[in-house]
Image 1 (tube, one colour):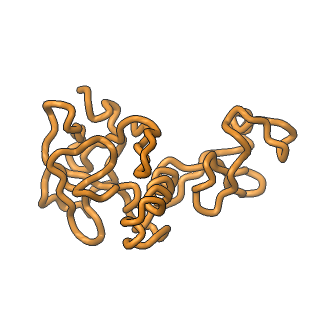
Image 2 (cartoon, one colour):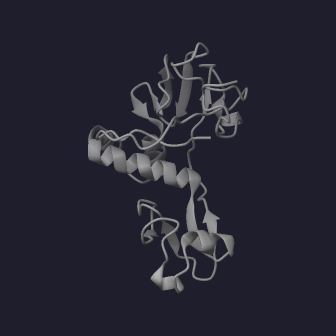
Length: 184
């Protein structure tokens, strides 16, 4: 499971990003383990090599979630060099991967931090009563089925392999690693 990230502008947000390879379903271990090895990220512009994955979503100096946002039309490649734009792209990449809340009746999208494309930032956190919903919290709205998880179909997704010559087009996106890239 991918549990978070470190902000490029300095703040620790959460823990490691971890995946399984798209072809062999092996854990992409981070450099803090003895199982770390060279891994390759497929992009529309070619394959990016990472020799010592740090656990925070960077491969060959490029942020995988920022690339996800860019390759799905939410930014430009030049934005990746601007720390503020990079943080925004990274957050968008994470949110389009894991989704947001969609009102089943209106189709409106609601997200916690407001970075989800075309979404409305809901008030507070998942335990905060929402005026628009007669004081119900986002947690209540999800439990009751008023809000449902919405994940868009993506043009490009993260695909990792230990094989530089992997035919990435033949494989589904890399899945979250239940071992956090640390434990096996």
